[in-house]
Image (cartoon, rainbow, N blue to C red; front, side, top):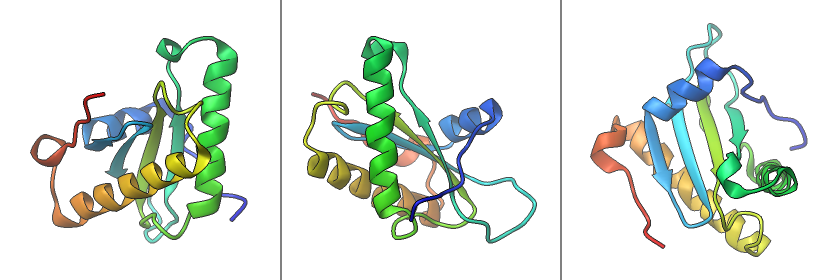
Length: 130
């Protein structure tokens, strides 16, 4: 799929940060149920790369790689009426593309399971220590 709905408002990013998250070596994924009026809308995705990663070209490359993976997997692993935020980590811009893709797929599967089970961020957050 070439196009997918994108999160743009700060309040949506903050809401996702408060709800459920999972952390993997190459990426962090946060999710929250959408508050938008029309139900059964497609999942919206936001992308973040903080200044801790480095200069602008690193942050831009990180977000480009995240968007490239989402273009390939969107619809297969996303749930309707959910807002997702992908956060790039230090390894995101240098890891092999297939490894990044596998981490993102695993993150989507894990966070979707938490959302379906009604788990919160405090109960089932996975933390990876490098």
